[in-house]
Image 1 (cartoon, rainbow, N blue to C red):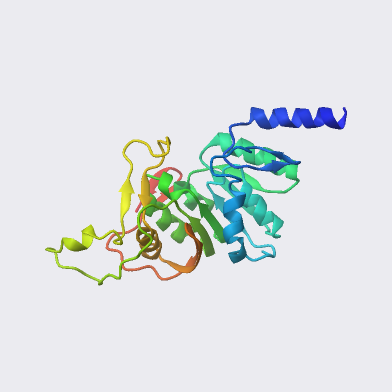
Image 2 (cartoon, rainbow, N blue to C red):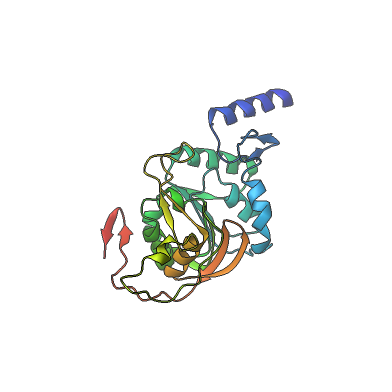
Amino acid sequence: MSEETERMALKEDIAALGPWFHNMRIQGIETSPNHFLGDYPAVKWNSFKHVVPEDLAGRSVLDIGCNAGFYAQEMKRRNAGRVLGIDSDPHYLRQAKFAAEQAGVEIEFRLMSVYDVASLRERFDLVLFMGVLYHLRHPLLALDLLYEHVVGESMLFQCMQRGTRSVAQLDPDYDFKEWGIFDRPDYPKLFFVEHRFADDPTNWFIPNRACVEAMLRSSGFVIEANPEREVYLVRLGERPYLDEPTLRVIGGAAHP
């Protein structure tokens, strides 16, 4: 088979696996060259990659909502040891496995929801939770499960944001009769999407900056860096007082 014939066959294989949300480069062929966000997610990665160690020196990485595996592959390029990518969409996992095979990198992929991470029974040195939170109907539960079960040291977190970038300086408590604080645009707000946003029925909640940061702190994470508008590097901290136990989701069943 000639080189040109092989290239045409590869293009056909890539097209058959479409549509692609990640613009991967597979042997020089772009999977989504006309992406509405540009060269995505490479253009995003280039703005915050400096907060990830150049050499991950065999550390374990969990990529939640891995899609076609762009970030998982970047972790292997930085010498990560075990890399596990999980996604609840088998379409994306087929793309991820194909792209990894073509790149010659060893990455494990599993069909799994973020709500099932307790079943992994393993903590990872670095967890990637990029572009997932706003697709979840139970975002705080997801953050609590990550804190309790899989984040060993650090987490790279990204979430779409809308609203003001200002963050209110709040008192630790307010009287029941307080109303005005809730009208402030810089108060933590989580906007609910009943139907669709950007023609996507899985866009459920869109927070402002204050809300993202408050939710991370509330789940026990300490913000180390905010290198890009939507991206945070966080580490495990102390959980604040909670008056009810977090649900632990194991094998599809919820247990207190």
